Length: 115
Ligand SMILES: [Zn+2]
Image 1 (cartoon, helix red, strand yellow):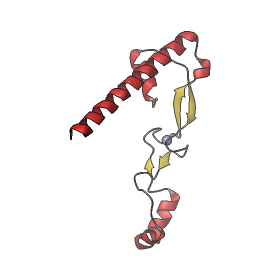
Image 2 (cartoon, protein in one colour; image 1 turned 30 degrees about the horizontal axis):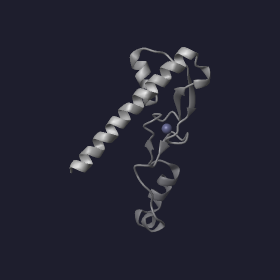
Image 3 (spheres, helix red, strand yellow; image 1 turned 90 degrees about the horizontal axis):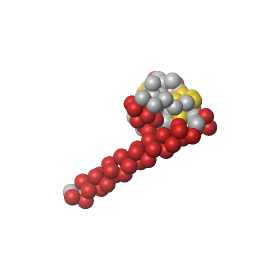
């Protein structure tokens, strides 16, 4: 089961929130993406050959989307369905996630600055 990170915090804490399915934002609902491959110029395609070009166009070389695990949809919190207590909990979890990210960012910045 794939959940957004701040939702994951809730699940770990044992708090259930209403969720709904949404098109995966990473692969755009394709279930796979070619992100790891990068893109190829026409010249590179020529070098790699027709078979490669066909496979690439057919998506055979794409890797399974790691966010939705190839399911094309992910679960997100259905904010419209939250009651007041759940809204408060979501807000708290989001704040927690933001703080964790800010911590990470500042530590990252320190590492960079400290060289
Ligand atoms: Zn996906």
